[in-house]
Amino acid sequence: MVTSTANRAIEQQTADSHDAEKNNSSDSRNDGERRVNNDPRHTKQPRQNNQPRRDKRDVHGWVILDKPIGMTSTHAVAILKRLFQAKRAGHAGTLDPLASGGLPIALGEATKTVPFVMDGRKRYRFTVAWGEERDTDDTEGRVTQSSELRPSADAIRALLPQFTGLIEQIPPQYSAIKVQGERAYDLARDGETVELKPRPVEIHELTLVEHGDNGQSVFEAECGKGTYVRALARDIGRILGCFGHICALRRTLVGPFRETDMIPLEELEALCNRAASGEGSLADALLPVETALDDIPALAVTRADAARLHRGQAVLLRGRDAPNSSGTVYVTVAGRLLALAEIGNGELIPKRVFNLTGLTASPGRSNERV
Image (cartoon, rainbow, N blue to C red; front, top):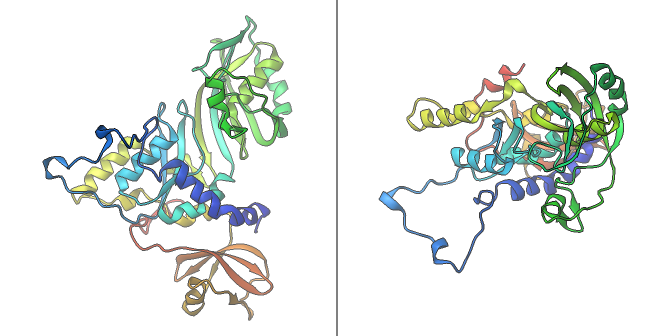
């Protein structure tokens, strides 16, 4: 069934996928680096040891990195882009440096499907340390409030319904929200206190998993786009009167991508080394581009219709096999992804055409997820 979320996503995906590439990996710089054009130390130097230039190539698909703690999402994208020698890459939803778990990274034509993943549900497992509230709402921050109180498991469980469903949430001071053109975390680092407005978010499920005597509790949450788990810990702690902050966070689900899809960085680097020596293929680490479109109906077309769609021309739908639905579909020809399109007024109108020439996922990767 076609959802309104899919319809909104296809209208915005051109801008969003460009933003993902621009913000995450279209530039080869890592975090904190800056270009200094007039500094001779930053001018182009000849290659040492006659090392050949690694040419960029077309790579299309998804890599679901099991991001390690301490790495930024931007840095993770840069590493994968280098490992695959990919021309284009971007991620589908920032994961904090202190968090581990699923970071979906889109390579090549998969960047066109980033909005569909970002609009999907996320699942987190997180630990809250009671007794202190911090300005970052996690362990990195400065203590702003403290208490000797510690909540009981019953008190926590009784409170969770207030944080389930559609709720209003104030983002953390250290967040990527823009305030008059500046990121909130930049203003916070400069010592400014900004008033961030509450935003509606949806918490589909919030469960207390463990509650020990060490002053910590473990939760699992499944939530929609834009939810800050750090803010959940902050707000629950405030209502309980004991304060709290996140001390561990792991993302276990992002849209269609599950924990079983994740690959650790060490494993990916080992695969890259084997592929360089001819003992494997990096295609084994890729999931197909269309994996991001699991919630969208697929429509197969003939080669003649595929040729029209590839040229950006609409195709008239008729006959008993014509779909009676409307909205967004992804189009295939001979089992291969061709385009994202809209069905309306008896026509199939292409919105995004895919060119999957280059390195793509191994044929068996789709079947592994069934």
